[in-house]
Amino acid sequence: MKSFRDFGIDLPDRFHGDRKTTCPKCSESRRNKHEPCLSVNGDEGVWKCHHCGWTGTIHEGEHHEYRPQRKIYRRPAPETVRPDMVPEVRDYFHRRGISDATILKTGCYSTVRFLRATNCDTVVMAFPYYRNGELLNVKYRDARKNMTQEQDPEPCCWNIDHCVKAETVYITEGEFDAATLVECGFDAACSVDKGAPNVNDESADKKCECVMNCMDVFETAAEIVLVTDKDPNGLRLEKELIARIGAGKCFTCRYPADCKDINDVLVKHGREAVIRCVSEAEPVPVPGLHEFGEFRDRILKLYRHGTPRGLTTGWPELDAFFTLQPGSLNIITGIPMSGKSEFVHAMMVNAIRLNDWKIGIFSPEMLPEEELFANFAEKIIGKPFFGPEDSRIEPEELERALALADAAVKVILPEEDRTPTLKEILTAARVAVVRHGIKALVLDPYNEIESSRPAALTETEYISKVLSQLRQFARRYQLWVGVVAHPTKLQKDQRTGEYPVPTPYDISGSANWRNKADNCLSLWRSFRAKNNIVEVHIQKIKRKGIGKLGFQKFQWNRANGQYTPVPEDGPYTAEDCPPPRSYRDE
Image (cartoon, rainbow, N blue to C red; front, side, top):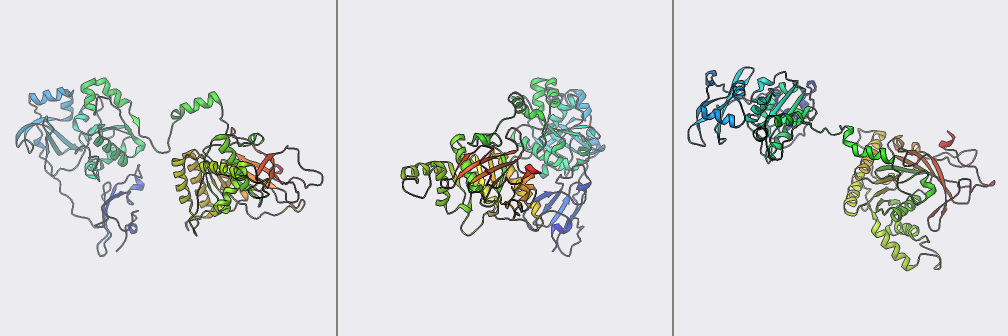
């Protein structure tokens, strides 16, 4: 047996029930290419397109252009429609705000019809349904909303012939709502034929079949204004219509608080209120599409207060070049043994103290957990974790460090004997955001994260996707996300015997390490000099309010992990090697 994909239908081989998707026969040629017009039944293995009529089956031995038995629709006799209206029905229309002119324009009339709800012949209103001038159906109802219609009618929207070639078409939930719009000058108004689906209905296909059968009219129109009820069922209908027609051309209306539909507006507030509601219809939001007016408050804040600075790193000297920006992706690289992890930990301890941050950290290279804590404890207390009793962290200081680290540092650990994926790490981080309110996430290093690169993606494409995920995660939760990434093997400078200052372009895999980052830092220190001077190079700053390109030197105390800024003109002496070449020499 063939699969749905053998026929170009993008659905799994096995599923239960009905699903909707695009049609491989006609969707590409339509204005709304993404409208799900193909109904597919997984249990029976058959499909039907509600736009072009294409049908088929996946069953072996059956012709793939298999067509199930076509439903036979009945047409009412034209003489069914009579231009008569008894006074009591006419008065009812008038009480609903519908004039004789609109009654005549829409072809409404009255007749006597047997209603099951009343169990007798009843005087009813009649709403004839025409398509291309042909009578397809007549719906009948009394003043209590008891209804019936002609037998086996073809689904169609009421008053659809008045919408053909209209620039703007209005869709309502019932005939009286459409007649209300006609009454107020919006002639291209139509109504669905079966009302709104129930909010709990699994599928709305039956209730929307009339719309699919008239889709050529809606596709021709430039705008579709949805004038549905504002109860749960009406909002479900609005959602279903948007899904079928496309959000790009749909508009929705708002009504006064005491009105649930547009006829209520006419009866309670008058014609001008209806015109105002419809004329002020708002476009349906389209994901990713915005207007500057949405950001007015933020624009005015920027105008009045300027570009905001980031939060302090704890070192004023470094703040001149780099500050902590919530909602940013930060790449930290550096030559081996330059102290990347040590520096990031020190900066995070400063953020905990000065910015009242809590942080999440994934740092498998610093495990086991007690050694990771020891690294933080040294930076919290300012003393070595090990060493002579008179200089190491004292027991009460250890308890103080443990209390602070326990409250402010949330450790994300890999499962035993398994490297975690980025998805698993971000899932844990998301919980830390909600449960603990972390403000920063440190991933140290990147190469300890499981690479689940699909075979179809190149390494460059995969890294681009990963960094985009991290940047979006940072933006969504307003986190400072720092990723420590090792550079590829660097060649020593033959003149100085030193490694060059690495840049994000030196990280294995892709130039996207720099392109996708908001800020890039690179750490460098000389292995010929014996002074433990670390240079922190700021190589990319995306927002000028966060910092600028440059570098700051620090004296690194190996014993306690503390970093102390040093003047720019030191501490090199004549016997020390010259500074390394870097982006400053390019």
